[in-house]
Image (cartoon, rainbow, N blue to C red):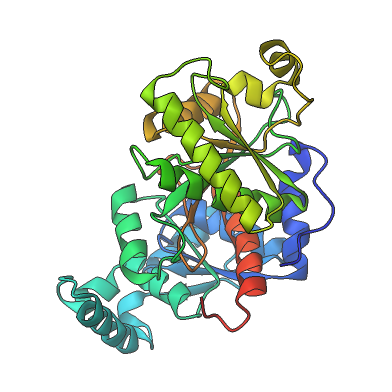
Length: 357
């Protein structure tokens, strides 16, 4: 895989950096909940920037009325109403086949495919879009269920998980390049050692792709290098050892360290104080949390108290690029999330030019 060139210089340049990559490799992004003025505005901006070909799912008349009411152009924005789509019957057949091969009980295929989350996921699975974004109006569980049921998982990742991208030019220690990758912020309550190691590896690979350089991963804990011997600290230490071994065997450009307290991972002065005699280490780009509570609480505090910009949640462990945005997402969050998952789609096409995983 060829890494993206030219590392971003600051958090202010992050969005511009993503757009520069996409102008060279434009992608098709399907939005599962298109009847939302925030999505319509974000899609129009993506077209204006000439980086993404947006596909909005929903009722065409309602979407057009919303756009007209707010004065937003729909030029070059494709709108699909799933039950009326030309591929509706084909997707129904494929869902029926999935249920047969996986021995799943999913109900009526027509009812399933008519749901925008399922239709959008099927578009990505079968190559009619490069990435999918959803969640802006629905409960996360409904969106995640559609992804899990329709998109093939990666065989080397035990469970799918979420990675949130944060930026903030006014904040100190926001990663080595102005981007901080947080995992897992949305899916696994208490990952075990193997799952934590996979989260570290896959998020490190994502960061390497985005940054175009070696990525630095910190396995977070209340303990630093054995300062506490609680079961959770020992679990993070074991996950660190396993992830380091996997990175070494895979010749990956990822540095993984743990277990570390958050200040040691992000603040070089704190690291120097708490680990005297240790070599100087770069600020971590990736923070892997011990559980969902720690990750989600940290994310919300950074976003709502510290004012960090949240670029949604990339869903890793699937064979196709997908992202989830919260129901409170701003237009900027939806726009940035679409750009981020489209850049992730660049990596997918580099790794799997024929579309097969």
